[in-house]
Length: 300
Image 1: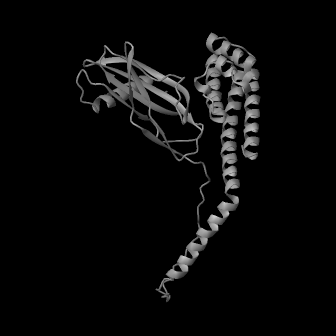
Image 2: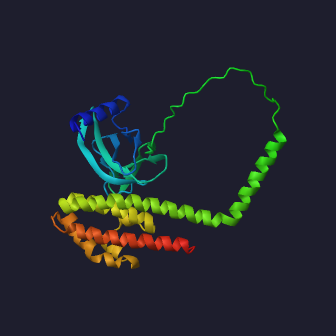
Image 3: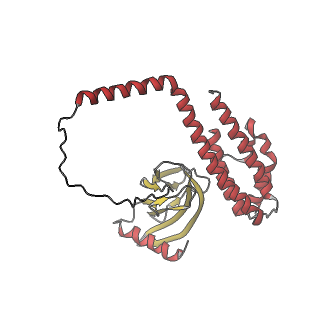
C-alpha cells in the first residue's frame, strides 16, 4: 500500500471524528476502501476498533472464511492509545470470483476476557461488481420529423390480456417439459465459469512460483486453492489441516504435494520445484471438477 503511515493516520482520524466515546465504550467499524471491483482483482476492506486498553481485542486472520471473498493479504497497524482508548486498524486485501452484481461483507472482532469472549461485527458493507463489456456507441444521426401523424388513441386491452395469458401458458409448458434440463444447464454453466476463473488465477500462481518459489507466495496459492476446492466439493477445506484433508477418501492422492507445501509454508523454506506440487494439486482439482460435471449430467 502506498503511503502506509499516512493511510493509517487518515483511517484513525476519520474513525475518531465519527465517535463520541467514553473510556468504557467499545466500537467496531469497517468497510470497503473501493466502490467497485473486478473479478479476481485485489480490493481492500478496512477494520478499526476503539476499546479500553485493559481489554484484549483479536481480529480475523488468514484462516478466517471471508465468503464470498477470498483472502489475499492484510496490513496491520500497531495499537494507538489516545484519550484513554486503544485504537486498532487493519486493512484486509481480498478477491472475489463471484458474479453477483452487489457483494456484501462484514467482519468480527473478538474481545477476550479470560475464558469468556464477546464478538462484535462491523456494519454490513457492499461493493459493486464492474463488468468488462465493450462499449457500443451509436453515431447514427437522427432526422427529426415534425409532421403530424394520426394515431389510434384506444389501446387494445383484451389483446394484451390474451398475449400475456398465452405467454404465461407457454412458459409453464416449457418449464414442465424442459425445466430439469434448464436447471442442469444453469448448474453446469455456473460450475464452468467458476472453474475457468479459478484455473486462470491458479495457473498464474504456478507460473510465478517457477520464477520465485517464496513461502509467502506458496501460502497465498494454497489458501486460494483451499477456498475454491471448498466451494467445489462442499467440504470446509479452508479451515482443515493437511491431515484432516487427507482423511477425505477422495483426497488421498494429495498426500505428497500437500506435505511438501506445508514444509515450505510453515518451515519458511525455499524449494525450487514447489511449483510441481501445485501442478499435482491443479490436476487433482481438474479431476474433481470433471467428476462434478459428470454427476450433474447423470442427474445426481
